[in-house]
Length: 398
Image (tube, rainbow, N blue to C red; front, side, top):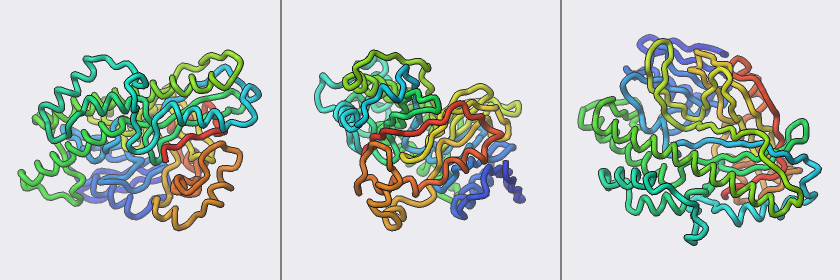
């Protein structure tokens, strides 16, 4: 931990970096003054940067309330990684055909979805029935929920979501991907953020930021929200499982030798809320751009598409609510990145990586992110490094 901020009338803010923008710090201070923040305060991870309502890279412990905007709209967003029995020498010299195969087999982009029924994965009917019941009780979430959920299961999305083939120090091949609950999670999250804001107006509660609107425990909205969030987080896990299965199948089409998965899938959410016990109390823990890092937990901390990524093992640091960073963290906005960098910069910074190198992904250029090695150096008390991965192929949902 780098420092602790204690202000009168507020919970402590514990920070694992010296590199924090003023806007992000102010968001943390706003959070720390809410009456239901747990006594041990707010934890800011080394990849912290400003977000909607609260900082991305924060761990927020609340007692008897949750803040939907801090959980966000990409409910259950996270990572999965597997190690294969392949070595770097087993990969073809030119990886473009594999990238193209993945891009054909997995829908990409903001509205990406399967267009043909035969391309859609099998879904447990009871799983979709739970979503249908949520939609029937809250028509404002949107129409055709189950159709959207089915069509988008196994799709990547856009922005910083990716699928990568990586190599570790022993030249083992890994597949790693990052995605969440897609459009259906966005619909659920956005709907309940507005419900919380409406509740604040009805109770005449003024907040320093309207996106800190909260739902008190044991209210009908709280119970409905938690049921919907639990569903979306399960959906995000399944979405990543389906994509991993199809990515490995794409590799098999272009690699002649047989291979197996030698490392059981490492799965970790980094935008979610869960009930956990810390400091002797049962609390709601919201990790907004952070992963759980209990002692022995395996996790994934990715760099950008031209940097390194890390497989880590948690140390169970109580002051961070057993958490660590979820990645490098942006150091500039997408708009700023497009003004600052050129396509030539992107090509130089992704040298040696088979990926898109055009304007469509310029805002994802590695230079727009914090240095992943510095982020890792700031959290040696939170995790230990198990493996360092270097990307050789990256698929983006531009």
